[in-house]
Image (spheres, rainbow, N blue to C red):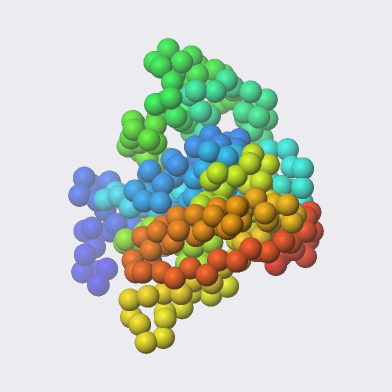
Length: 321
């Protein structure tokens, strides 16, 4: 089949690469976003992919896994790896998340260093810039995010400050909320991918297992409306997703929401169970959108004492060494 279309393919290291309609070779590969917590990495990935594949929250350190989102273009397939915010860890969980970020940096073709336009460049940004300076062979595009929250002068000043943080392949401002320059960000990342065949089938937007995506949607719903210190103590495990017997229009989802202390359990449940019911309602709507069918969500809450510091609990909740 390939030989019959030889005029549309070229060979790269023994692998055929399709030629686009403009005559350029198709590119495919991996990019990752790195930055301190709450700089808009997940929101930016969702915007580039065109749908929600990673949860977002106003609370920092929302991302706990390396979530992959797949951007399909006529000339390329860009696989974006959204990483947890790099920070000084205070728990075993924090140490494992930082280790995950550092290992991801060595496995991608291009790195996007995210710094928000509306916040001063601080020690966290400088720390990450120093870390990136040690990554010699991988190009880094500095991305000034959240430009919709800053005026033009702020954006210009931030671009200058970010450019001085290191030796970047490019510096670009954008807004995931307004769509400003998302195409430019995509172009800059794609330009640094190797030539090659698509890595995922057309239309596939993430390779995350369904149970992980559902668990993350429940955790996102639980993050809203709780006290500042609580989000880091919330974990969700989906035990089972199965069609309701005798029904082809309903899926049953059974999940556990874990917190670290009995007092936190009371916070999540709320007066007469009102908050937990609200969490379930909001999560169910998101899960139905994801699965494309009606959902019955069985959500229960349990205390897993100090799970962020307990190796056995971390493994049980899916955070491995």
